Length: 381
Image (cartoon, rainbow, N blue to C red; front, side, top):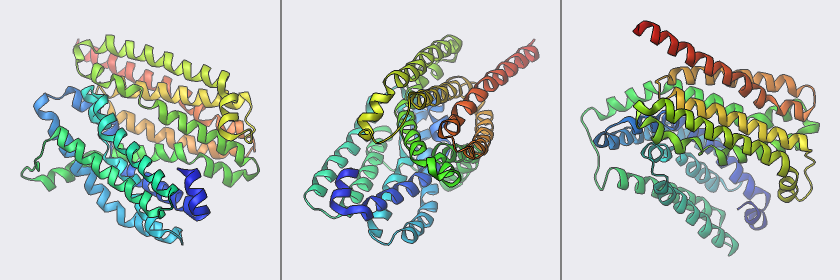
C-alpha cells in the first residue's frame, strides 16, 4: 500500500499511516494482555464445553483494556500529525484491533484454517478494495475505514463461530473481567518490554549513531519481517503438545526437533540467499553484506528457538510466570546492551544484540526447567 499512498497522497499520507500504525501497535500489544502467550495452551487443555468461555473472557478483558487506551492514543495521533488527522486516528484504531485476534484460540484448537478465513481473508479483501479505491483517487480516510471495518468484522466472525449468535453474559461479568486483567498484568508487562526491545532497535541506534542508521534500519526491517513471518511456526504445535499431557515429553521433543530444523533453515536461507533478497527488495540501494544477512538469520533463528521452548515446554508445564519474568529481564538487558554496542558506530556489532541475548537466554531457560523438574521428582519421592 505504501507505493500507492506515496503516489496519491504524498509524504503526509505515509506519515499518517506510519504514525497511526505505530501508536496502534503499542495499544494492540498492551490490550492483547497475555492471551497470545498463554491462551492457546489453556484452550488445548480445556474441556470442549469450557473453551467458548475462555474466548469470551479474553474478549471482555481485551475490550476493556482497549477502550481504556484508545482515548490516550487518539490524543497522541492528533498531536503528532497536522494533516490527515482523522485517517491517522482510524489507522491507529484499526491496527489496535489486532489485539482482538483469535489466532491463539484456533492454535489451541488445532484449526488454523479458521483463522485464515475469519481474519486473513477479511483483511486481504480490505486491502484489495482499499488499494483499488486509492488508485481511483479516493481519500486516504477510505483506506483507514476499511482497516477498522476489517478488524471489527473479523472479531464478529470469530465470535459467531466460537460462541454463536448470542450475547454471552454471566453474573459478575465486570468483576471477572477485572480479575482477568489483574491476572494478566505480569504477562502484559513482559510483552510490552519485549515489544520495546523488538521494535526499538532502529530508534535507539539512530539516536546514538545516526551516520550508520540507514544500514541498521534496513537490517532491522528485514529481521522484523522475517520474525513476523516465522512466529506462527511454534503455534502450529500448541494443540498437539498441550492437548494430551500424557504424551507431553515425546511430543514436545518432536516439536523442538522440528523447530530446530526450521531455525537452521532460516539461518542457512538468509546466509545463502540474503544478498539476492536484499537487492530485490531495496533495488540495490541498501549496502548489506553477507555478514549482515547471516546476522538476520541468526537473530531470527535464536529468537524462534527461545519462543518455541517457552511456548511448547514451559507454558504447558505451568511455568508462565517464569517465562514472563525472564522475558522482562531479557528485554531490559537487551535494550541496555543495544545502547552500549550502538556507541561503537558498528551497525553489525549492534545488530548482533538479539543473537547474544537469545543465546544467553535459551540455556538459562533449559537449566531452570530441568532444575524445577528434578526438584519435583525429589519431592515426589
